[in-house]
Amino acid sequence: MTLVPVTYKGGIYQHDIVTDLIEDLGGYVVQKHVLAQEVVLQCFVPKDDIELIREISRPIFGEVTDSPLVGTEIAVVSMSLEIHHLPHPSCDIAEYVRRIGAKSNMVSLARGPGKRISGLNDEERDVINEHDIAVFLMGNFETCIEFKMPKLLRGIEVPVVVCGGPDKETLIRIVDPPVEGYVGGVGRFMRRTKEADQLDKLDEIIAEITRVLEKKREDIAKDPLSVSPARLMNLIREKIPAILDVTSPTPLTVQMAGLRVKLPYDTFAPQLRAMEIEDGITLGDVAEIVPSRMRDYILVKVLPFSETNIAI
Amino acid sequence: MLAVEYFEVECPEPLGAEYYKQIANDVLLDHNLLKVIEKIHIFIDPKVPVFIAVGILKPITSVVRVGDIANINPQEGKMTLVITDETYLAAMLKIFWERFGKDKVEQPDRFTVVLYDVKADPKELEQIVIGHPGESVNRDLIYALRCVAPEGFRLRSENFGTGKFTFIASENTLAEDLAPIVKEKFALMGETP
Figure 1 (cartoon, rainbow over the protein chains, first blue to last red):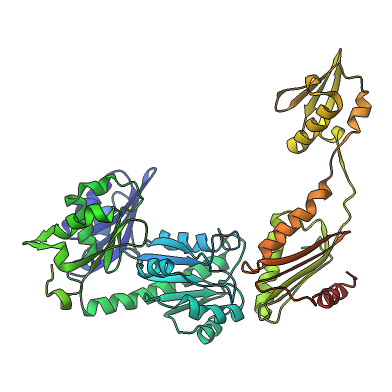
Figure 2 (figure 1 turned 120 degrees about the vertical axis):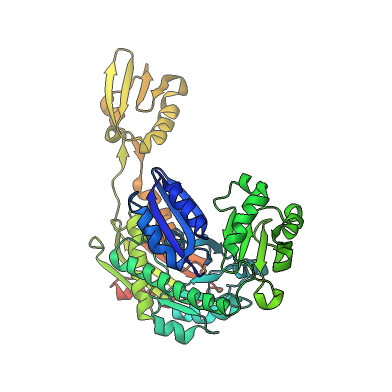
């Protein structure tokens, strides 16, 4: 059964019909937002059943759309938290990827700005590496991007998309070591992205992120995960009730090959390791449970089938 | 951009110059500074790296008087001032306290100030100067140019006054012989530093 990421938008009235249907079909609701009279569900559903969900949600005016970024956690790397980069373009981009289902975190560097003086420390590097993809938002000058990129990419293991002022061809030429994606013409600007051409640029960033993540998905599919992170999310919600008291917007953040659990590591890691998934198989058997560099959170890294010989 | 007589951004990277012209325009517009700038020339060389902004300001001669922000209503033994613009209210109260004493000045609500037993003529009161809008222009301009300049350029040299300004920033120690470059940039606008 292939699960595909989709977004369901509809009225709050009778939306539980859709929620139940998704669960009955073997899908998972990753995030649920209730906004006044509207409900937005970001979910994984079986590919063959999308039409059925569309049909059943039609009488209640629900809409099902493809959302390739559902179930991914994206690091939007901003060079600093100064007025020079915020709120435009860093927040605009972080917000735009959120709209189509991704969970985006802004990672702002302590020593990001400048050419000679810029750098990346170990904490920033580790935090970026905890995500599925990193989007680096660079400035307008190719001289600076060329000079500072080798330093900023040192130790980064996740796929990277570089956005910068110079055009795409120039970025491909100057960024060393080469990265997975490039978007030109999006450097530093100090106005809100609301015109059609600016929104087109944001769409271009999304297209590039999607392309890079699709490739990562294909790589994961070659050696499938022992257990689906979305399934783990539901299990943790059932078996560790403390997660229900966490006030963070996404207490359990689903990633492509893991899960971020926003509970203190020392208290809950042993419980998580011992949590039974099915037939005596515990989470510790199929995943690495490590402390996250982000606050005191727990990072669950699901191991592939080739390492565990278990598929559930 | 229409209010500015000369507005150029010079950079060895043409695309970078274009972006920075847009940034400078947005920032100066946001800070309401385009109307006080007559000419501005920005030079950026990311290879050095250096950021130089030179320009000419329009003369700001107007001052704000009590009559501009308040209507004075003389009554028996007191004068009531109805405030129309709060911007200079604090400065006005400070001047009143110094001149008449705190016990004679009262502010019952946001838009009313009452002066008790003040011997001054209402016409004379209206003429009291309470603000100089030109005073804060230089401070605002420095802030705006810091926003325009690339963020890593933290070593700065600023020269503001007499209607002309020079703002130099870099991430390296500033060179000592920048005066000829500044002079050259002023000359491009047809001015002298």
